Image (tube, rainbow, N blue to C red; front, side, top):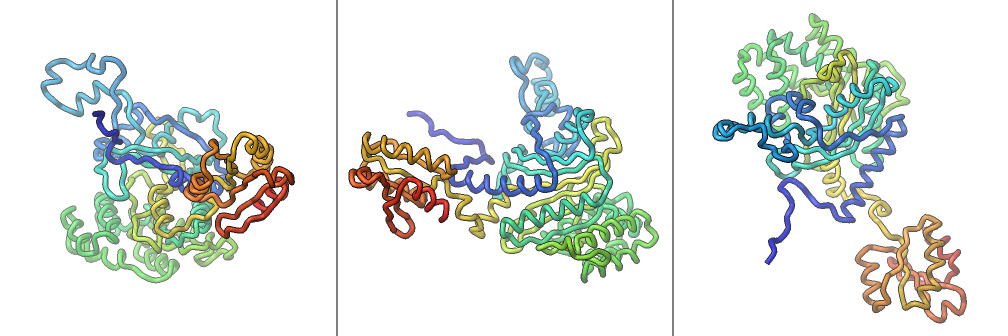
Length: 462
């Protein structure tokens, strides 16, 4: 007996209904990006390990899926090396390629390789799967999709403003209430300076970024383990627990960081972005958002290449982790020998957004319907009569099927019900003699005798 087939842990199959829902997500985001002048690119599933290694930190390197060299992958490996069983060393000899870990590093590589072809600023979006050798768990997969948008070659904060407008528009179209959080890595650097712990900026940001998940006491314990003194931890408390409006928070943190040039620059950048979006003092509210945007001084994001504004989005009506992240990076292409090219980007968490829309049942009916009209098959004569009407319906943009076999009527109607097809058309001797069709509305049970033209009009008007 053959073994039952399976798929690797942390991967999933998506059936027709799931793909209809996912395509609704992809198409919604794609359409909004294109409203703002973004263009689509794709990069290979595999990159060279030279491109990937060392870009995500030591932990990220461990999570890279490495691809064995074609042919004899052991050709460069000695018996002694095999006996040593040093996995990292063997991988370096046996593998030259790996599956992409995210879309950002491949994008940086793309920009450097195609710099002469690109018109700067370059606004790109990209939706493709990425792979991480992580431990699979709820909401975390080894293969998952990212949907990124980036602008490179411009220092203007208008790019941050537009990205927040894109975020707001996308989730408004989804009908999902979200909270957009914003902070700035320069503010975080200024806080580290204020504490007299500039060398511990990474430790501080990693710890306070966990505040929502583990609470203030656990954050403080982690800071102690990282070597901060009780006095430094005490000075940090009013900052990370700061409340009030965005303007009040900015005024307070500006006073705290008055001696930090870097910190004050971060404050001014945040103030400009918030004001431009109509949620701070300074600009008219013509660009105001449908969703709340909030300054959160504990927001740090995990990737250390962010240098300016950082963003995160949380769904308000579903308990789930962040569904979007991003920020400004000033030298990402420097890792490939092109320093000084500034960029800013966001990444939609497709799989979590999918879970949110499922939990809220927020899909429009038309987004998940496939076939709109099914023609019943009574036999060869009736099928020949129906085929011109089938063609007419398809030409009008109506998604149409004709049942391929002259099966029992009950079976064909069950097929229509199972696929949630809203309309069924049929033609027997009476209809054929009159040059018409019977059109049935599957939701109401209403039946009408119509011409092929009337059939098309009726469905389009519904």
